[in-house]
Structures are given as C-alpha cells and as structure tokens.
Length: 365
Image (cartoon, rainbow, N blue to C red; front, side, top):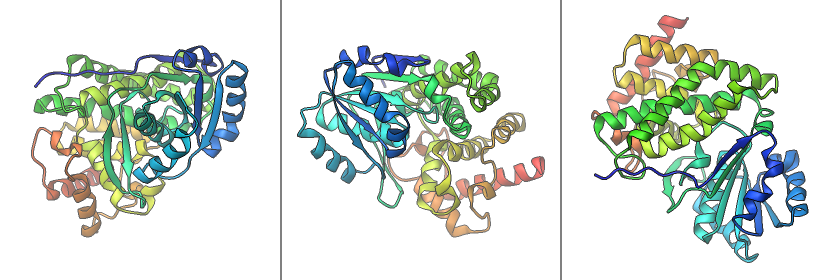
C-alpha cells in the first residue's frame, strides 16, 4: 500500500491576522462568499464583511444553522451558485467549517477556513462529517483537495470560552493514540492509504505540546491573553492534530464518538472533543494500555474538566440496550473501528466502557 500525506496549501496563525487576511484571500479570487452562523455574524462577521469590502473584495454573506447534511448543502449551494462566487470563506466553528468545505467542493470554489475557536482539528482537512437530521452520524465525506487557506486569528480564539479550548485539547490528544493504533495494525489512514512517518511524528509532537502547555494555555484563555503557551496549543489543536488525524488515521476513539450520536440525552449537550476525551480513554482500555498511561490521560482530562465517567456522558452501565446502541453505531461500515490492531466485538466495546468507568471510580473518587 502506498503512503499518502496531504495538507492545506497555506496556514497562517497570529494575533489580528483576520485584519490582514484580504491579501491572502485576493490570491484566491475577488468575489467571495462569507459563510458563518448567527452568533459569529453578530460577534465579528458584520465588521469582517466591512473590512473585506473596504479592501476591494466583492462580498456576499450567508448565515447557516443546523446539521451538516446533504439536504442543507444542496439548498445552500443553490443559493450560492446564482451569485458567481469564486471563493468561499467559512468563518466559525466545526459545523460551518464542514459545510463550507462541502459546498466549495460541490461548486468547485476556492475555500478559505477561518476558525473562531481552537476546539476542533477540522480546519486543515479534506473531509467533512455528515449527520442525519436527528443528529446521528451518517458518514465521512472526502474531497479531492484540502483547503486553499487556513487562517487562525489567535486574538479571536483567545476570547472564546476556555471550555472550547479544552475540547480541542482532548481532540488533539486522541490524534497520537489513534495514529499509533493504525501504525501498529499497518492499516490505512482516512485517505485509504498507508500513513507516513511524518504524520505519526506530527501526531506525537501534538501530544507532547498538549501535555506540556495545555493547562497553562487554559489559564491564558481564561485571562484572555495570547502567550507562547496559548499560541502553541492553538497550533497543536488545529494544524498538528489536523495533519496527524488525516494522514495518520483514526481508530476506536472517533468511531466510539460516532457511536454516541445514536443516543440522546446528556451526550447531546457535549462538544465533539468532550465526547472524544471519554472515548479516547475507552480506546486505551481496549488496547490494554498500562495503568500509568491511563492515569496520565485521566488526570489531565479531569484537570481540564472533561468527561471521564459514564455519568459524565449521561449513560448507565446497567443499561444494556443503551450501551449496545452505542457499540453498534461505532461499528458501522466505513467508520474507523476497523483500523484498530485487534478485532473488537460489541461485547468488547461494552465491557471497555464499563471497565473504564470502574477504573475511574476506584482511583478518582
């Protein structure tokens, strides 16, 4: 199997780079659609639109809310296609980023990703996550190329709630764990090719940075101060984790995250990275990793306020039907559980969840 590593064409990170972004966007085209949600539009989208117009760009704006689904993409694409747009700029969080990439691919537009948080590694990748109207995971959608531009304004990101940064740290910490599992299996990354040593090295550097600077970055975020520690964690959450997961591969942690999309309750209120924190720990249990390694992750996750128990996730270890629903959804064809270096059954997954819960309750109560 041949190796494949891919990345965005250009990555820019720094304080106030949104107000310097017109020069980068003009390299992509002159007629731009600014796609965002209502919250981000009110917070900074309106002012950003004015800046872009003053810089000489033709700008249309669209506001999206809802699930990233084929139906939503089709409707938005129809509205956009009539305006002869050349560049789509997705300003916001994970759903805006995912639907922006999908529309740009469908309409063959240049795509610029402008994340307003460091809560996800979606910005750099050539993949979107699609959901059903009821919120259940549907599938990963893959595109022929990565974003043309990813531009991260740390002055914007530092003003987001610290909870979002914690979620991004959890998502970032899953990267090396899953990439190592794929490497051990000699499996495929999400591109269907063998991972490169470079992807694994980036994933492991991401892990190193997040353990070294994660707690300090959280404190900086609460103080609304961009420091070297905060800047490093934003880069790890966004660029390193993005390159590491896409070219290094996903395994049980993200498949189990998708398993939680099949149930409703407390988990619906949790962010992607918060759920990934718990499912990363379950993957460590399924791999029979050492207590020392498990405790290292649990301790950090608890310091970050992330879920580590079934109660935190809103599930009952005695509810066989609920656990079976999660397990079955995590095993759907095309998801990443098959990239684990061992075969796993529904029973294995259920017992892994229960074993993690017991371990945390015994050692951290």
